[in-house]
Amino acid sequence: MDSMAVEPSAPRSLPDRGTAPRHRDTGLKQQRAVRTRGQVLDAAAEAFATRGFPTVTVQDVAELAGVTKGAVYFHFANKEALAQAVAEEFYHLLGIIGQEVKEADLAPLEAVAELLMRTAAAFRDDTMVQAGARLQIERSLIGAELPMPYLGYTRAVTGWLRQAHEAGQLPASVDPEATARVLVSAFFGAQHMSWVLNDRADIAERVAEILTAVVPKA
Image: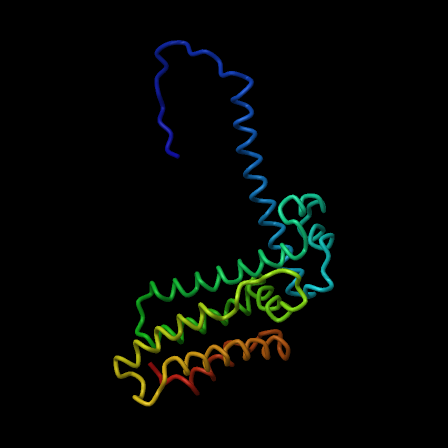
């Protein structure tokens, strides 16, 4: 909030010691709580991405975050709650990528290619995204409800392919909905294979191959 200097015109009474320091303390505590929660979430993502949900413990997350086990439990009731939060953050990040591509105002087929390539880079470089992907694979082992996978992503791809179809950029025989499902299936399959075989080092090349095979050059 902007501050404004004021010339004192008369002596002012001292703040009530029973309220003012407490307000300042509350603000600092809130900042620390937000910071600690972020540390814990990042640590959980690292643990889940590298070791998988079944073997990770709350103590592992606490040690990675550099906090006490009690601090983890202050923010998350259990390991399942941690997994839920990481999965939600994963889909939030995918949504951000989609919004950024939308705001770039690209031609429809260029937007599809940009979405897939940016997402590929996130899978390669972002631990939170890697963790979210692994948790989706392990969702049957997690005693909590995770967000439904792939739906929003498929809707975004479908929307751009419909626009391309209506603009005559795709053959009349192409079904935008079916093509979107094929693209999304191929993309998430490719990222998984790239992870298993090459620690995602070649994910960009694999996605480029998918685009070349499925989507006409925009």
